[in-house]
Every structure is written in C-alpha cells, then in structure tokens.
Image 1 (cartoon, helix red, strand yellow):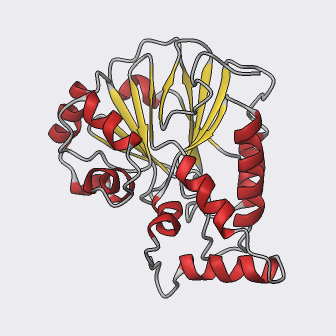
Image 2 (tube, rainbow, N blue to C red; image 1 turned 90 degrees about the vertical axis):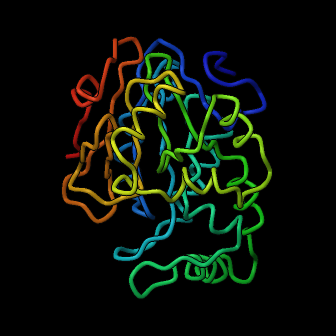
Length: 259
C-alpha cells in the first residue's frame, strides 16, 4: 500500500513529510544491529502516520562486530515494503557509489566491508545490488512544520529549493553540493550560515548526524544527534509532525535517548 502523504511510486530523493503523525529520526548506526533492532521496535510499521528515518551511515563498523550486511538486507526489504520507512544516503554508502576510499583511524571501512561481503557470501558478490540500492536512497528530507534533515551539512552555496531538487535528481554523485550534505561537519559552518540556509528552504531548524557528539549538540538552529556510533548517550528524535516549530528549542523538546 502506498502512502500518498510522502512519496509517489518513484521514491523521490527529496522526502517531504506531511503535517500528520510522528517521525522518528535516527543517525549513524555503523553496523550496530542491536541498536538498529531497538529503534525498529519504536516504529509501528502498520501505522502510515508513524514514520522512521535513518540519516545515513548504516554500514561500516570499526569497534564492534560488523553487522552491516544484516542491517542493509533488512533496510532494503523494509524500504521496498513500507512507505513510512526511509534511510538517507550517508558518506559511507556514497563511498561505494563513488568508489572512493575513506579512512577511520587506522581502518579502511569501504574495503573492509567489500571483503566482508566476499567472505559472507562465499564468493558470490551482492555489491552491485547494494550500490544500486544506495543510488536510490533519498538525500535530504523536510517536514511540513519546518524541520530540515540531512546526513551532514548544509552546503551553504544553495540559493533556492530548485537547487536542491536539481542536486537530488542528478546522477552525478561527485557534485560539490551533494558532497556538502554528506561530509560537512557542524563546526565548519557558522550559525548565521545555517539560518540563511533555513530561510531558503523555509525551515526553522535542522537535524544532522555524521559527527560523533555526546548524545546531542546544539549549534545555532541545528541539532546534531548521535544515535549509536561511539557514544554512551544514544539520542534520537520523535518529531511531532503536527507541532508548531519556531526554532531548535521546540525541536530539542523532542529529543529522546535509547535505554
């Protein structure tokens, strides 16, 4: 069954949520299957007004056992079945599309993940299937009550909503603007630049993951959340899609912690 509140059958890469129900927002899991299951348990798949959105970097564990494949297989299945389930593209998924090596400490997670696939599937290689899915992943999201959500960023060269539509519709994954929404960290952007961007997209606050923080960090009208990776406080958001949001203060009240 399709949920006409968000997407048509083409699954837009610029998600736009309606002013009804709630949206659970979870950031970087990096292969933590235990946490993934806990967040899934908070989502009611049968309720079309209960949405869940992962902000990217589902894959590439470094410190715990890597369950990226198990997470990815389930995410693909749920994405195909449920319109109220979505996962944004993160820089770690992007690395496989762009064929770019990334480094975390002394590890090279892209290559490690590809080696893990070969071992797990005994010579069979579903990497092409995974990359095809990564290319279908949405890039950015916005709620009707004024919350903008992306993996990272924002890229401050954006001049209009039309710019965003062009980026999300492009097949060029090496666009500087796209990479900005995947790589830019909060401390590289001024609070004023965030407000200027929010004015352009007609939003009041912004949520990103990407950078490890102690649960949450507030940077102007941007909230950075760490839901799983390398943090003891595991924060996520339950956004009331019908609430009035004027600034990050209203959004901050919707932060919750995984117990």
